[in-house]
Image (cartoon, rainbow, N blue to C red; front, side):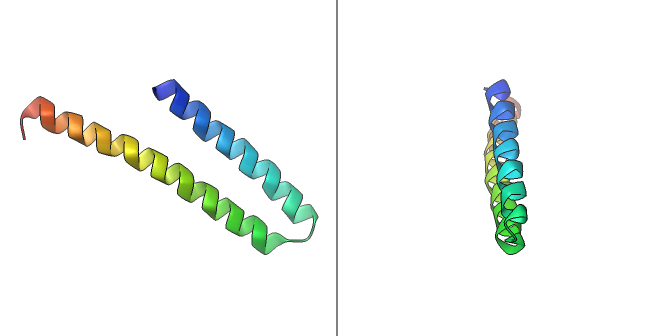
Length: 64
């Protein structure tokens, strides 16, 4: 699970960076910036889900 998450995040990062370069070369810098923000938001949501699972496991271990 953990390695798959790292690969997913890396894949999203590579895809976003390539699309970002293409949009900037086309002169659409505003869309490139919005695409970057959307990519960051998607990755942040993925990481938040993992952190939520971590806290849930910690609660179970310590009986909170």
